[in-house]
Amino acid sequence: MLRKSIILDSLWKHKVLITFTISLLIAFQLISNEVFRNRVLYLLKISPFIGSFLSGAFYAHFTTVPVGTVMIFLLTKSINPFFVIFVGALGACLTDFLFFEFFQISIIPEIKLLGKELGRKNPRVFKLWESLRIAERLREPLFVQKVAPLISALIVLSPIPDEIGIFLLSAAKYEIKKFVLYSFILNTIGISLIVFLGNLLV
Image (cartoon, rainbow, N blue to C red; front, top):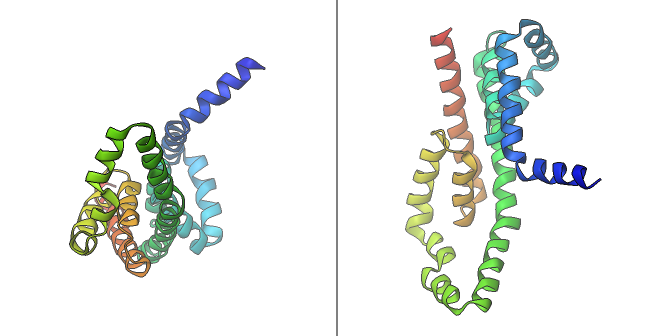
């Protein structure tokens, strides 16, 4: 019983790495195993909209990006690429929006609470926290309108996990309407690049 508990604790501790590894293995199977690939494609093509939407949703999350990328590429071989790009971007946008809300509602308040609790226990930490005033700095008009979107765009278009860029915009209290449009445009660009590069390589 104790051993089982230790194993479960270890799995939970490394859940992100484990999920990412599983995602890589599935992506590899999609590329190398024709039987597995055809079965997955058959399921995805039952409803092209759902298949493209799920592919985009997987693409937007760090741990499932390998599967999402391969699914997008495979779908464009049998479905109109522009349809896959558009619907995939909608799926990715939904994933980004959920993370944006999650960070704003749960994570950021917890970080603030942790800072205050540490400050009560250690006056030096409190002084440092107050001097930095990170939350207020992130919400300065120049940062919110210019700096945060630029940094986030570079993060989303780079190999760095999108969640970092989303967290930055969430902490800056970026407008939800602008964020959704911003996310859709960037994901459209990202998915278009996958399709374009995939066609060049194959």
